[in-house]
Structures are given as structure tokens and as C-alpha cells.
Image 1 (cartoon, rainbow, N blue to C red):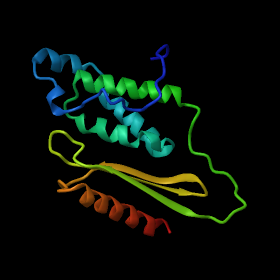
Image 2 (image 1 turned 45 degrees about the vertical axis):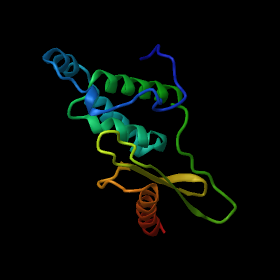
Image 3 (image 1 turned 30 degrees about the vertical axis):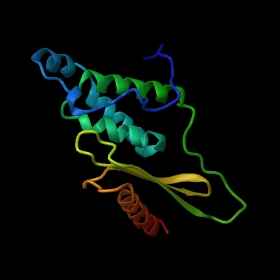
Length: 166
């Protein structure tokens, strides 16, 4: 990975990850048993929690396949590592500001983004003095029946976090 070329997005659109890509033959299982997928997911998750909120969605998606990762899942993880290599100089910065301290929240969701069970991913981020202080990206436990419903679910999660932060 040291000589690999960096990429500009954490998880490219050409990665269509699903359970169908998991190993099915004994040879595939043995091959993937040699790959440090679990270590990579854990390490990137630690990095995301500590200093790189831009990795939240990607690691949320990649961690869904921890039980049985396939070759395409590993390729997506290597892509994410190339992104991290290219953005290693970026992180959260806290600066002294003359203006008042303002807490801002942002939300986003994808309706039925999981192709297998049609569950949606909810994400939110809070900034304090223009610095990211809290963030989350997770697959919802329920199947939303409309894009409006998932937006309300995401907003509710974000508001609960905002009340706690305030």
C-alpha cells in the first residue's frame, strides 16, 4: 500500500457491496482467511472515531461484512486505505474564534440503500465553532416505507444527540 496511488473519495460508486459477494467455496474461504480484513476494519474504525468523521459512512458499510468478507469487500477496504493515505494530512481542527459559540447540526440519509434487505442508512454531524464535534452513520434497524419516513427517523436521532450536546 505504500506505493499505491491515492484516491479522492472514500468509497467509490463502482463498489456494489452485498452478501452475494461473500465466499461460497472452500478455496475462497481459505483465501479470505489469510486477508487482514477484520484488523483493517477495526483500525479504520478507531481512526474514524478519533479524528476522521469522513470515514463514517464507508466504515459503516464495510463493517456489515465482518462475518464473511469477500474479495470485493477487501478491494473496497483497500480503496478506503488509499483514500486515507491521500488525506492523512487532514483532520479535525479546533480554532479560537471571536464570534459566539454556535452548535450546528446536519443530517443525511439514503432511502433503502442496502440492496439486500432495503434498510436505509442515517447519518448526522454536529459542528461547534465550525469544527466537527459529533458524528454518526448507521444502518437503520427498521425498513422505512418512504424517503420521508427515513428523513424523520434520521432527524429524530440527530435531535436527540443535539439535545445531549447542548
